[in-house]
Length: 336
Image (cartoon, rainbow, N blue to C red):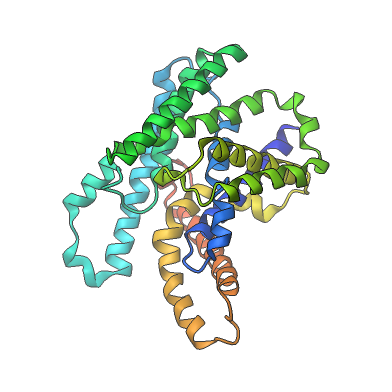
């Protein structure tokens, strides 16, 4: 059971990062983005909760240091590496216009006014897991968890108000309550996974997916980063049903090595796909789509080709990082 669980979690992570890449591609049709934004970021946080383990830490200090090493240090190192690649290799003509002080400020504050690239997820994940540590340590009953979820919803509403008033909180702190809800939900599911097997039957997939899509489409386009969730009720219903449908699907399919491989490198894919890979591919696809109009006759075709190329390039970067620069992602040993 544990081996199977780990494998389908890796496949789900791969599924998430593929959706993230699709969402950031310029050629992806708006209708597709509407659907995937319903649940793909909530699912990422949810999966982080399914792998969260606070019981093995004796104190918040141990937990904090572990998460700092695994999340915060890679956040800084990956940002710096991306900045170097973009400034020196991909856009050397702009090297004299580099504002180092602004980059340092953006790196430290990481608020809505000072954001380089798209690594906000890591800041929020780190802060949310700290919140979840305390919630888990001091919540031993369903009643306590219910109170925690209510408080998080209220705090999330406050964060949304602050964002709308243009109070830009450092490290996107306004997103932490909602992220914590999904992480805690994933944690609770994992702790009760033995009692939840009947809810992952294939016959539930279509109706569960239908609820997610109907609520999500009715709620129109959402984007957690921009606090664009519209109806809070519809947002969470669509997100959780989308998560549920994703779990049903991947629990019931055979293990796919390709997805497992991608799932083990989602941090690298996440960091480098938009500022590096898609930056290069957008230039290439623009040239190809204008020259070979007979092949690239729609944005759907262009998007599919760009996605396949993006996955291959991301995998190449993952191999380079794992083999030569594992410290960037918090690893101490090289892997192949």
